[in-house]
Image (cartoon, rainbow, N blue to C red; front, side, top):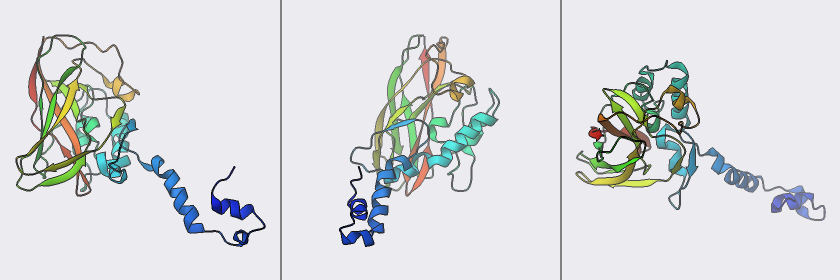
Length: 252
């Protein structure tokens, strides 16, 4: 049954409202009901914004065009190529068409080389060694303002982590994510720390083209590996891709 008072008045022939519809109110209510369907970011996300508001979400991660770019990369790049790295670092002058941080490095591709962010933000990681196996390894990612100006914006509290060896991507953050917004206000020299983790396993092109990574991915062999992080940080309405130097982690 219709509950909108304008619709009720429209069908009540005994009221003068049948001759007058408040179109502005109807349109405004319609837009409000449709708003959740208009918030789209990157891959598959479960949205949890709390009281932080959703208006800024449309700029984070390059919005839908970034997602489309990542899908196009997967369709066009042959297995083992560095197409993912190139697509992540190339785009138009605004950077909007690049892949989002969680699609920066693809399984089996070359580890992307990204220029430092003009904001002065740098993202570093700290992880302990781990025995050979498939259990996730917990660590931290730290966002630091190395510039000379205070940076104000927002980001996801879950940076994208990549495991690589000799410049080849072995694993990267994947799967559905509970997306919330982390405010960023960093004066020069200040830092913000995030919890992070990676799986010491080897993924392949088929995992990137599937809805989720396979659950039985093989563990990496004993040796030294590189772990890096990337994040999209929205500053002044622009989604800045922020990365930094990796850290060597011993497995086994």
